Amino acid sequence: MWIRNSIVASTFLFVTFITSSIAQSNCVPSSCGDIQEIRSPFRLRTDPEHCGTNGYELDCQNNQTVLNYKSRKFYVQEINYKGFSIRLLDPGLKDQEENCTVFPDHKASYDSMTSGIFGWHRANNDINYVNCRAPINSSRYMPTSFCRTNTTAPNSNFSSYLVIGEILQDSDLARGCRVETVAWSAAPGISKNKSSSLSSIHQALAYGFELDWRHDFLCRDCEARGDAYNCILKDNSDVVTCGHFCKESTPVSQLSFRCKVEYYSVFVLFYGGIGIGALMVLRFLVGIPILIAIIVWQCKRRNLNTSNDDSLGDKASSSEQNC
Image (cartoon, rainbow, N blue to C red):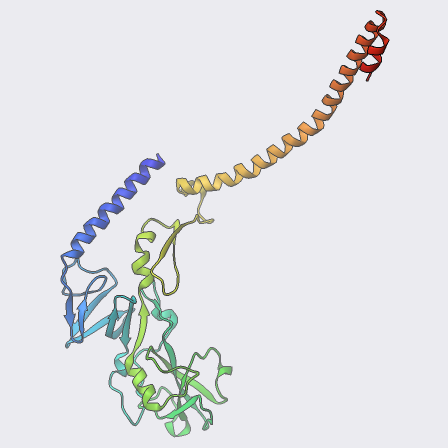
């Protein structure tokens, strides 16, 4: 039964893969604005339905490629099909100003941006918009002025700064400072360990940030096999390991055949080991008395034979056979 189900499942996956591959091969890459190649798994909303994959749908608005993701709108700056990443730009950061720092429309957040489709890309740096009640003398704090502010107090009461690097707690900030919002940037050349000019930070904000779609794209076939399979993908690697596991919270009656075998095999090995151990102990406890009894019986038999030999006068031979 298990073999038949495996054959049916394998045939279904094979046919689905072949059908999908044939359909995708008939899709012509589309373009919008600066993005000249939009192909699987991405698609424009106007592309045929069999092209691309759900969740990777893009719009073309005013000759600008747009991704609407989790009720947020982002401009698509680049799609890297070899690196499995997409570079996005917050619409509020598209037009930078020289005299002040523009606020993003959306606050950067790990939880709000990652999902089953997209993941966090390690190339990104946090750029914090910080307001302080007094001037800060630190190379980490880049003085600026905000084009608009989220604070309720007048701007004259605050000093504005840009701070690169993740801020986990209030203690990571100078006294009297608070973070107004956070933006991401994957621009090369900026980091918390490297001093940057205000113009370079503005350029980094306009560069945008990156999300990774490697895991979803490469693990799709593995995860389609069911919840009992776990896709393992090493960082910066395209090698996929599809591991099988059984959820402990799943009732035994709902486990797959393979999981049931693994489940009961534990008990078989455990109780089987106890049984074998008990048999060995029993064999030792019972075998020793039996062995002693056999030796005693053989000795008595030899002594009896010796007595018979004595009657014939063969004492020398009988003395050698005594126990």
